[in-house]
Image (cartoon, rainbow over all chains, first blue to last red; front, side, top):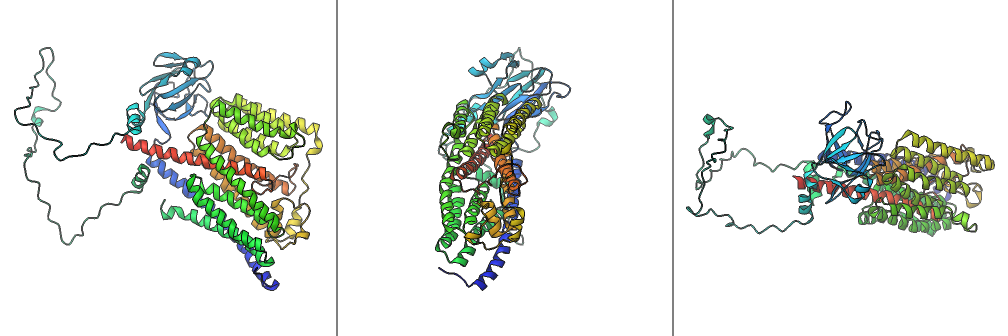
Amino acid sequence: MFSVTPELYATVSLVSRWLFVFIALLLLLFALLWQRAERRERKERFKNLPGAGTIGELLVLSGSDELPPDTWFPVPREGVLGSLRSCDLVIPCPGVSARHLDFSWQDGTGLLIRPHIGCKVLVDGTPVDRRSASEGVPLLHGSVLQVGTGVLRLQVFAALTPANQAFSQAVPPAPPVQETAFRMPPQGTVQYRDPVPPAWQAPPVPVVPPEMQQSPVPPVPVNAAPPAPLPQNPEMPPEKPARPKRADRWKEDWSE
Amino acid sequence: MNRKQSSPRFRFAFAALLLSALLFLLPAVRSGDRRLYLLAALVPAFMLLCCTVLARLFSLDRMALTLALFLCSLGIAAFAPADPDAAVAQALRCIPGMAALLIGAVLMRSLSTSMLSAVSSAFLGLLMLSAKLLVPAFSVPLAEAGLALLLVSVASLLSGRGSGLALIPGFAALILLLTGGDITLAALWGLTFLLLIFAADGRFLVILSAFCVTVLLFFGYSRLFPSDFHPADTVSLNTLISAGWTGTDILPGELPSAAASLFPRLSLHFGLLFAGLTVLLFLPLSLRGVFIATSSRTRFHAVISMGVSLLPALQALAALLSVFGFLPLPEVCFPFLTSSLPDLCAELFMIGMLCGISARNEADLAEDAHLAMLAK
C-alpha cells in the first residue's frame, strides 16, 4: 500500500502529532459546549413545562411554625416523605419521622402510599398501616393526608384525573362536521319558562346593579350582514402571520 | 433542534471521526500496512453508523455513545503503530461490546424497581464475583460485569426498600472482591457504594456505619495481606516524558515491558499531551451521567445513572494515579482502554444503561408535554 519516504514522514509525523493534540483539545471543548447547550435546552423545556415530572401538589392545611398553612409542595411521581432534608417531600412537623412514608403514582389508581414501620398516617381520617397500604389505599384528588401534626391536601393535575386518563387512552373519533348540524328549532316548538322562584325561595340578589343591567351595546340582529372588511392601506405591506415562538414550536413537536 | 443548538453536537462528532481516522493513518503512512488503512476507514465508519442509525433506532444518548466509542477507538489506536494484528483484534472486541451496550439500553428502558429485579441481579452479580473463588481454574475476569449487575440491585433496594437492605449486597460484593484479591476494584466499589448511600439516603448514622464497616474491612485486609498494597510496576513518568510531549515512533521491539496496558502505549506513541487530553474526556462523560441522573424521574434510575457515572470516573482517576505510581494499589486499567473483552463489555453495558435511562427521561418529558396539552 501507499507509504512515504522517511524524510517526508518525519515532517508529516511532526505536524500531525501537534494536530492530534489540537483536535483532542477541540474535542474536549466541543464536548463541554455540547453539554452546556443541552443543559440550557432542558432548562428552556422546563420553563415551558413547569409541572414536568410532578403529578400535582400537596397543600398544607395545618402544619407547624416551620411549615405554615397554604405552603404547597410539587409532588413527584415517586419518592419519600419525611422530615429529613434528603427526602423528596420534607415535612418538618412534630410526629413526622425522618423517613415517614414512600409514595408512588400509579396511572388510573392514584397516589399509593406505604408508611414505614411505626409511622402513623391518616388518609381522609382513616388510619393506614403497612398492611392496609399493601392492599392499596390510594390518595385521590382532594384526599387529605395527615402525618404527625401536619395535614396536607393532595391536588392532582387535571390531565391525570381518571376522566382525562380515559380520554387520553382512547380518544373517540370526532363526528363529521356538517353545515346543518345545528339548526334553530322552529318558532313555537320550544317553550321558555319564566324564572319565577318558588314561594319558599328568597328572591335572588342581583349581582349587577339594576342601572348597569342594560347592555350599552345593542344586540346584533341574527341576519345582519357581516361587517365590511376594513379598507387596506396600499402603502402598508400585508400582515405576515406571526412566527410561532420557540416554546410553541416545542409544544407542536411534542404533540406530534 | 435548530441549527444553532445542534452545532456543538456536529462539531464534536466531526472532530471525533476525523481524529479516529487520523490516528490510524499516521502509522499506516509510515509502514504502508493494509490493515491500518482498513482500520482508518472502518473505525470511523462504524462510529458514524452507531452514532446515527443505532442511536436513532434505540433512542440512545448521542453524547455518551460518541464519547464511549471514541475512547474505544483510542484503545484500538494504542495498538496500531506497533502491533497492527493486536489492533485488529481489539477492534473485533468492540463489536460484542457494542452488543452489550444495546442490551444495557434496552434492559434499562424496560426495567423498574422491584424485589425480583433486585434479588435476581444481586444473585447474578455475586455469582460472577465469586466465580474465581468457586472455580479457581476459571480465569475470565467477570468482576466488572458483576459490579454492573450489583449496581442495579443496590439501586433497586435503595430506592424501594431503603438503605438497610441495600447494604447487604453492597458489603457482600466488597467482601467477595477482597477475598478474591481484587483490591483495586474493591476500593472503587466501596467508594462508589458509600457515595451512592450518601446521595440516596443522607442519614448520618447510616453513612457513618457504612463508612466504618468499609474502613474496617480494608484495615483487616491490609493486616492480613500487607504485601498486596504496593504500587504497580508501570512505566515511570520519566520514561513517558522521554518519549516527548507529542510522542515518538516506537518500533515493536522497543516498547518497554511494563507498557502492556493501553494508556502507556498511547502516551509513548502519541505523547503525554494527547494522552492527558484524552483522559480529560472522562470529565464530560461523568458530567453527562450526572446530568442524566438529575433529570431522572425515579430514584431507581437516578441512583443507577449516578453509579454508572461515578464508577468509570473514579476508575479513571485511580488508573491515572496508578500509572504514575502514586497509588499503592496494583495496576488499574482506564475504562474502555482495556484489552480484556469481559471488562470492555461490562463498561459498554454500563454506558448502555446510561443511554437507556436518558431515552426514558426523554420519553417521560414528551409524555408530560402531552399531558400539559390535554390539561389545556
